[in-house]
Length: 166
Image (tube, rainbow, N blue to C red; front, side, top):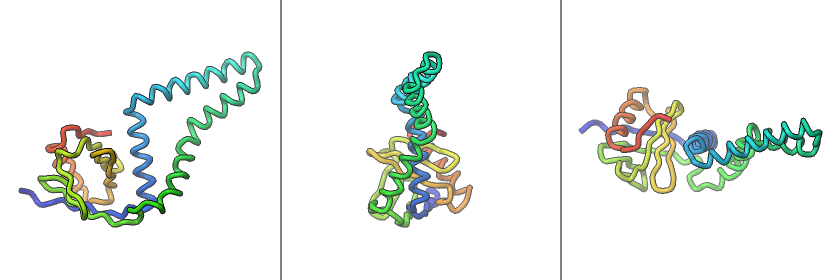
């Protein structure tokens, strides 16, 4: 039996927003809903071209605003809403001390076995750990060293069926 791996970090607003953005981007890329987004973008851009050819200024303005929203403001609006909601979260600014063992993840008030974990995604910024209907984000700064991060990745790869790089 190997030594446990300690994962420690504070769930502050910056970590919360980073985790939210990473999960949002990852889930959007791997969701069937992304096809609806592509259709939305295609129709909107078609509207821009049609409006330019036909001289329909109203349609051109509407289509242009939708494209700007989709490519720039969509995450910005979501980020503002998430930042406002952070202070109401019960885990806001909470210190997390998680131990990864051969059996699973041990937290202050909960234990999650490796069998309960649905998926782990290894990303350059950290790990998304999906279980039940939620996820936990382990930022790279939560690990004492790169060796500890690599040990966690190996342990997760061995014990979780759906472990992959995002």
